[in-house]
Amino acid sequence: MFRPRIPTMPTPTGIVTPLTHTAPVEQHHAAPCACQHTTPAAAPAPMRSAPAVRLTPTGLLAVVGAGAAVVLVVGAVLVSLLLAVAITAASVAVCAVVLRSLLNSQTRQR
Image (cartoon, rainbow, N blue to C red):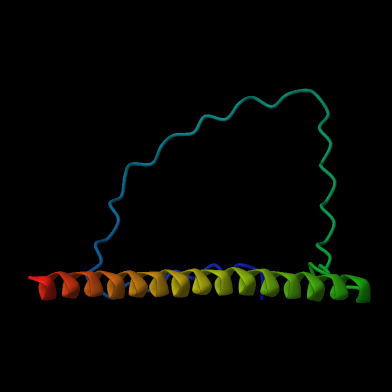
């Protein structure tokens, strides 16, 4: 699930132009040396890997606790933002009522 999947190259569906062929390049091999070379050791067969994360009961409890803490912090931030918007809206409404009252009183005095 967490391993990346490399997509395979799809077969072309449109017009395909063939590759141009170039002249073969001559390769010159070096003369063999007189020293003794050893063959490298064969790489061990790849073992089947274990899951990347193993959770013990304590680790699981820590993850759940951290998740709950994140939810509480995000909830507190969102509630405070909502409260700030509500307070701002109420103060703007009070200012509008006061201005309306002042403007109405000025027109009545004339």
